[in-house]
Length: 231
Ligand SMILES: Nc1ncnc2c1ncn2[C@@H]1O[C@H](COP(=O)(O)OP(=O)(O)OP(=O)(O)O)[C@@H](O)[C@H]1O
Ligand SMILES: [Mg+2]
Image 1 (cartoon, rainbow, N blue to C red):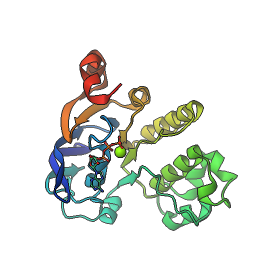
Image 2: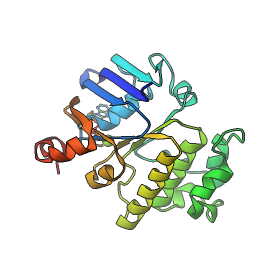
Image 3: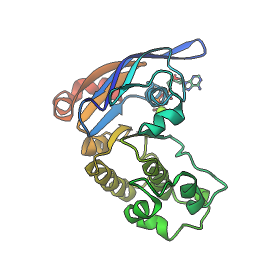
Image 4: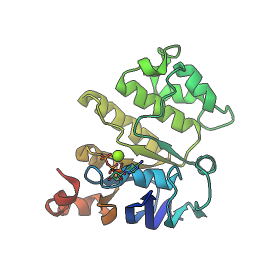
């Protein structure tokens, strides 16, 4: 059973035809990195998968389930959750309040277990979430995603704006999540970071999938791929 299989996804914003044939596949648990230039349609792809933006056509299959017609909430219940680009902060809430909203003690991932993975957050539980540093906000956003007990997490540019040492820390956290048999679909401008954790690479250009393959195949063709990923 494949983790995620997307065929010929098309999405419009009003009359603008943004996604014009996106095809993605993650056959076995692991990390798929979606790369592409600014405006290529990466965020729209993630939003379409969780039905934050409704696709007009195409098929999205998550672990044998067709997602068509399901709400974002129903999709999260099935184990597919997204960390959005702005990290989805609840600005007026403290760290512990943001975690409590989602916590379900019966889940494999509860607050106690999540905080073991993010010790930095432990000392900030009473702080307002908007007062956290960029790296801490990213960690809170990932913690919230873990509390939904996901099988697949979509991450939209998690390293954006983070200092290099925090990026390294995040890479280790994501590797630990992967070792827990949780898969990742990650959108990244930081290609080196993506290559550090991904097994599979997909390149999107002008709303269309241009290339899919393994990380090793990608590395062999990097000159050709530069045209589409702007590095
Ligand atoms: N809400 C919206 N309404 C209309 N057009 C939009 C909307 N959001 C995005 N677009 C357009 O859709 C296209 C794809 O945008 P998207 O945000 O998916 O790109 P992206 O690959 O994530 O880019 P970036 O790397 O800059 O984050 C762009 O041309 C963008 O201007
Ligand atoms: Mg984007």
